Image 1 (cartoon, helix red, strand yellow):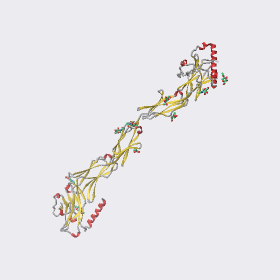
Image 2: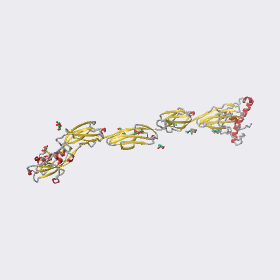
Image 3: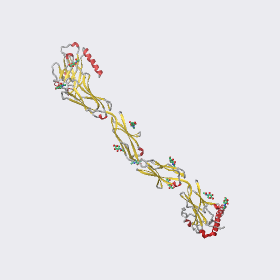
Image 4: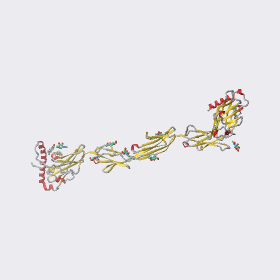
Length: 581
Ligand SMILES: *[C@@H]1O[C@H](CO)[C@@H](O)[C@H](O)[C@H]1NC(C)=O
Ligand SMILES: *[C@@H]1O[C@H](CO)[C@@H](O)[C@H](O)[C@H]1NC(C)=O
Ligand SMILES: *[C@@H]1O[C@H](CO)[C@@H](O)[C@H](O)[C@H]1NC(C)=O
Ligand SMILES: *[C@@H]1O[C@H](CO)[C@@H](O)[C@H](O)[C@H]1NC(C)=O
Ligand SMILES: *[C@@H]1O[C@H](CO)[C@@H](O)[C@H](O)[C@H]1NC(C)=O
Ligand SMILES: *[C@@H]1O[C@H](CO)[C@@H](O)[C@H](O)[C@H]1NC(C)=O
Ligand SMILES: *[C@@H]1O[C@H](CO)[C@@H](O)[C@H](O)[C@H]1NC(C)=O
Ligand SMILES: *[C@@H]1O[C@H](CO)[C@@H](O)[C@H](O)[C@H]1NC(C)=O
Ligand SMILES: *[C@@H]1O[C@H](CO)[C@@H](O)[C@H](O)[C@H]1NC(C)=O
């Protein structure tokens, strides 16, 4: 603009100095003025000096330079005859003799908008319409000029521009709806451009996002008139996104549907994303973004973030989504086999949200318990055979319960049970030896006084049966007893050997009394015979001779295996008969 202005000054100087140039004129190309006010069109013209006219006249035409088109006459110095639209409205302010064609038009109305041409009349044929003309625009609104970009927090200056080319009527500019703008200030200045003058009111303020969409007005009035013109502009404030609303942390039950909503205020519209940890789940250019999660699982548990971004900045909001679920089936860390006396630790673990209560039961009795923890330890400083057995580990929270069974297997040296004993019946002696052990014990009967040892491989005499960890062996002897006879039961496994002399119990306590000392001697003899026979039979067997023992057709399988019911012994059949030597 300044350059243009300087150029004009140069042309002005040319006017003043070298007026001997060709026919030429100068006036502003464009002017505007408010309806009802007036305008002064500054104008200068030149003609060749050598013409030296006696009188200089001039005519202003509207919209056409050619008289033969009969354009409306705006002003005519020679006759004062003008087109009716201009009657009483025009006045030549310039002095034509001084080549000044400045024209004032008053009481402007919209139909006067158009081109204005000046024609110089120097007498005779020296008449000339200058091609330079002024485009006049009759307006009824001030112009509000906003900067290309209004950014939150950056001071901005709005201009209300009003033409000021009427010396009779001076405009007054007031701003409207600007009272609440932050740090606002107003000042006015006049500006000249291309020979026309403007009154400019400058409104400075600090825009905020709340001002976005706000309508600002500029009003023009003239003193002592009722003229009033106003114009409005809507503020387009640019600002970074701000998350107005988003869900807070939430707990949901596995399998349910979850809807997360993020509402953002920004200008221009922001790119909104929903992220889980660093993974983008959904994004869109919008004012609000909804994330739908169907049939949610514990894998979707985590931190969710709504992030919004535009070129002016970004914002984010995070929330924790906790997925609640019933415990998983508990896991026991190993198959558990231990040796008696060792320390044992068994871990049972599960997973749930909220954390489970884990209990380890044996025979419905709680052995270990943990509340709000994912694992529980069952600890034995020194495990015993009584700890052997089936255990259940149960994990539970308000959403459900799961259990796992496991066995603790304890290996231990044999124990000879208290029921082990010998019973003398009418014609047999039955010895029962029961041993508990793991692994299973081998039971041997020893008759130390006879240097004889028998075990279950001697099927004629010994029968064994196993129930759980208990092995029961039964030795059956022909009813011949010597008073020194004693029988030792020996139980052995990998972890040790246990020996115990078996007690004699008499089914008939008067037996020895009846038999008397002689009988006792006889019985002793018989027993020796039995023992000898046993020894001999072994030798004979090895020599492949037939045994003189008579084996019954039915094997002694009538036992229930329950050593606790000696009553069964009575029902047993004789398994061998004695032949005296
Ligand atoms: C032309 O006339 C007007 C009105 O009298 C005056 O304001 C202006 O200064 C004159 N222009 C020149 C160049 O003398
Ligand atoms: C407006 O009118 C008042 C009184 O009628 C007068 O004193 C004042 O000068 C006028 N102002 C203008 C700008 O014409
Ligand atoms: C998240 O907020 C929206 C809107 O307020 C609501 O409809 C929705 O149920 C909320 N989601 C959760 C999981 O609370
Ligand atoms: C939910 O997810 C689970 C595991 O992926 C699946 O077994 C179940 O059928 C799903 N339920 C629905 C209603 O989609
Ligand atoms: C959220 O904003 C914080 C601070 O403004 C920033 O450190 C973090 O990286 C942002 N997170 C995301 C996911 O954009
Ligand atoms: C179970 O795990 C714990 C810890 O890892 C360990 O100390 C213990 O010996 C394990 N128990 C078995 C039976 O493996
Ligand atoms: C534990 O032992 C019992 C008896 O031997 C068996 O029936 C059961 O199946 C075992 N349980 C497990 C979990 O191994
Ligand atoms: C038993 O054997 C031992 C040595 O093997 C022997 O000294 C003892 O005399 C034997 N006793 C009988 C009754 O045979
Ligand atoms: C049973 O006794 C026989 C002969 O006395 C012996 O050879 C065998 O090894 C014994 N069996 C066991 C399991 O001890």
